[in-house]
Image 1 (cartoon, one colour):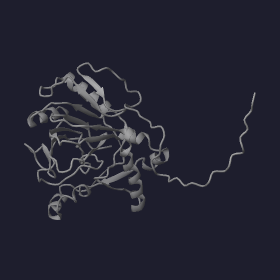
Image 2 (cartoon, rainbow, N blue to C red):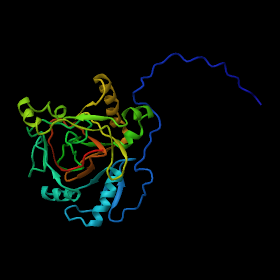
Image 3 (cartoon, rainbow, N blue to C red):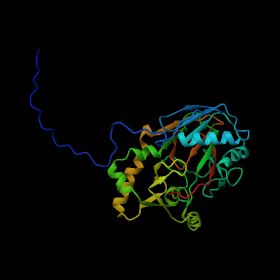
Length: 312
C-alpha cells in the first residue's frame, strides 16, 4: 500500500470578509411553518413555480363567485405559497373587485392613478401618465398604520417583451439571517414614510397635501404573520426610513443589510405576464419588484388592494 505524503500546510494569507454581506452556501428554504400540515388541494390544480413562493392555480374561472369551500382552499394556498397566479381570466374591474373582497374590505390609494372606481388603481406605462415606477423591492403601503393584507393585480396590456413581476418570500429572508443579526433586530421597530417612495414622481406642493393624511408610522422590523405565526422581515427600500433607537449611520448600515435579503434568487419567483393574467399576493409576507425592461412600450395593469391589520 502506497502512502501519499503531503507537504505541511502553509498558513493562509490574511483576507478580510465583511461581516454583513451575502455569501454562497446552503439556504434554508421552508415553505410553511414548522408543524404545518400539508394537505392536497381538491378544488383546483396547483402547480408550484418556486421552492417556497409562487404557484399557478389551474381549473378555475374567477368570473364566477367563490363558494366558502373554494375561498378557504384558495386562502390556504395563499398562506402556503404567498403569491398565486391565474392565467387568462380577463376579469372586468367590477369582478376583480368582487374576487378581492372575499378577503376583506378594499382600500383606496389617493397617491396613485385611479381606475374605474376609487379602489381600483391603474398603472398605464407608456401613455404619458404619472411617471411612477415599481422597479425596486418593496411591500405595498407600509406607510399606513394598517398596511394592505394583499393585492389582486391584472395585466390588461403587456409589452412585446419584458415587463415581468418578481416576488420575494420575506419569511425565508428572515430564516436565513445570522443569529447575530436576528438578535440585533429582535423587538426593534422602524419608521415608515410615504415620502421616499413618491417624492421622485410628484412636486412638493402635491406631496405636502398628503403629509397630514399619511404621517410617519412605526412597525416591527420583524413581524409575525397573523394567520401562520411565521416571523418575517418587514422593512423595505421604498418606505422604511430608520430603525428607532439607533444612530443614523448604524441604522442605515443595518437597513442596507436587511434590504439585500429580498435580492436572493432562492427566495424569489418571477412571473411572465400575458393579457388577462391575475396575480394575488400576500402583502404581509412578500416584497415585489416590477421589472422595467420594456422601454417605451405600453404596459397597462389594474390593482385592487385589500385592507390589512396592524403588524405585530
